[in-house]
Length: 101
Image (tube, helix red, strand yellow):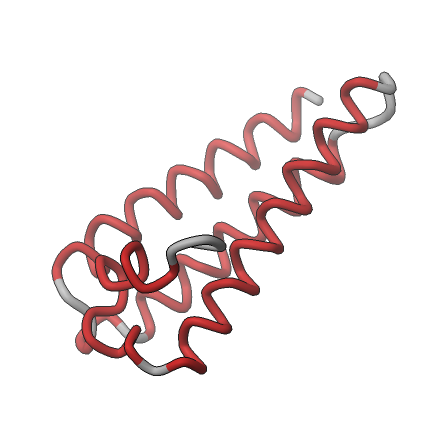
């Protein structure tokens, strides 16, 4: 979504993605996810604790899920169901992985 927010965002948000402000928010979210992922990778390579990075990713996915559910009635089916499923999987999977880290 950092590079092509309109293309990927349309699946989640529908025509609302045509607003430049919406694309700004999508890029910001993508940057957030990239930073969390990069932080986890650096921590792993340095053999530093990973748990906080994994928890941050799970929390971000949980926030995406809640935001999607709140707006579900105004979203296309791919956003309502697809993004909800991926976000839920990320939140639950991340929480489980964090306990093992």
